[in-house]
Picture (cartoon, rainbow, N blue to C red):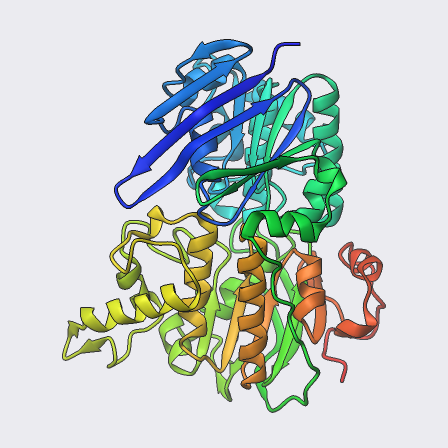
Length: 507
């Protein structure tokens, strides 16, 4: 049988790093092939070479047994290669259907395309509304758009870069069923993920990349999560010591927060109430698109329609205050979108410090203290082991996982009194995820009040003291993590929690 894809000695150099150093890879027809490695190991660069978005400096690419030079993504799509990027390539002001139409022939009818999108989304269990504008979608919903767009092409090779990072367990199972069905029909899948259990459950073969080089090839079904982790990072990730402690004063209180839809496709928030106390982590679970985006906007100050006393931070009513005023009270915030909200892509890492630290430390007499910004950025890079050329590196030049480490580090090192974090380890490798979670737990132990919004249930169970679930704009009662189970939280994610108990914290 002719192999679907062969890479021989692929090399790609950048001024400050060799991203791929003589990497070889073989993918058979109908094979689900994992590519595993740390953040910055060169996985995404390799996938972009296959997709024609990056040109290699050396090496050969064979497609169905023939040498090819894939000059651009359009040629890749003609060959039958589709890719879902970790960072989405969507236009905010266009609808879902219009975004998907951009990659199709000019004579494509939008009404026919809308029907195909709905059919494909329904077939694969990926709920989508083709008429919605992208700027109204959550990160999880944007990921569904990218996956459906790729599936519409009926590819021979589907490349997925962290496809389940913001999907719920049920959606992950649905996606796996889809991929197995595609593989059974002869489609090959290149699957990049940091979730070792997923790779072991789904993939037939795994190529491990470390520091831009081949580190090994194995059958992940015959490996343990520990052995895969060791192949990837050379050691096992540190265990998180999460000791139950007494909580302090209430540092953030939300009372009766109700907000009408800000646009036709938004989720209405309905009478949301909860507390977060000093020295605790409160986890918030839920299926993407159930009000998390709207709640984050209200808490951060992006949406200031709430009543002043509906949101209280450190004893102050902040419902109508802008983000800067909230930060000066001791509020910290990590948004779910790394590029665009968490950082300005075209700005350096040092300049991006200003997004959350505008104090006399960084600005004096109207002048930016660039030496202080550079020192702070260098400290974040060192403490959080961010792979970057230095404080002057542009935010967009970092891999997704390394940029996430930088953003979380920027907020942690401010020592906030209240920290709201959305999807803290999205697209982050196992070692870095353990470090980020350990930093959040350490911040909690130092007396910070944390609200962690995540679609990674394992993550919430690992670090949370208490949990809520959000569904259709409503908040469940609070439950101690020790008393919760995956089955119970999954049931609550459908809105099926005990009624009449309100949504207030249970002591």
